[in-house]
Length: 270
Image 1 (cartoon, rainbow, N blue to C red):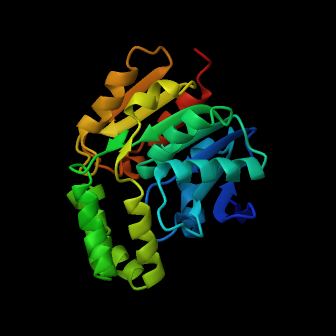
Image 2: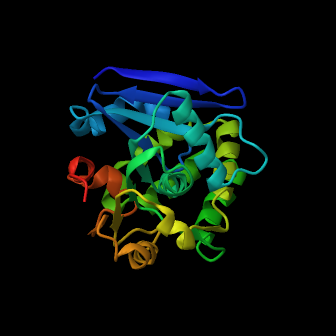
């Protein structure tokens, strides 16, 4: 499948993206934090999301390239909204995973004209100091500049043990290409989630919403999903599905995940 890699220039910042597919709808992916940009894996992303490409043209956006000294999730959402506007995209179907889910929810709250339908996976509406502890372990390793340890710990935390073991050699090889700048960027993006709390703003999401989580998620426990469910369960346009056994990376590992997203995005208005 042919993929396009592009860069949005707003005059204030630049943001990299890739696109693929030729479907009539527009589907936007907001990924979670990664040690290296997922835009560099455009072909693999296109293959993974190929079930959607008959119905959608798919865009995947990274975070902005020029990070400010502090960069909150809300600012990430504003910047993503600006990038979509620069490309003439509106009323899009959005899927956000992990931190990308936080960004996607914030964007749907504050830029409702852009988001037609929203799906979020392996995410949370808040990240207080207690919940931040697992991310502090990530940043501590990154600050030591041990890219291999970071990659391996990252895999151990987001995947079930068999999948993490299978990915071990790939992680070791990828770590050899990590730059100091990428480690600094990883720390800065991780810090941007501190003190996030969207719980009281979730009612501001006016579009249909699908939440997908996994009961064994070691990054955002099932209680994170339950908080969102408790806030939105009375809405007729809210759906949720809970996997069991795929961990945080269920968006990559669950075999029917993309079909589940497609079914929700194609579902008729409620």
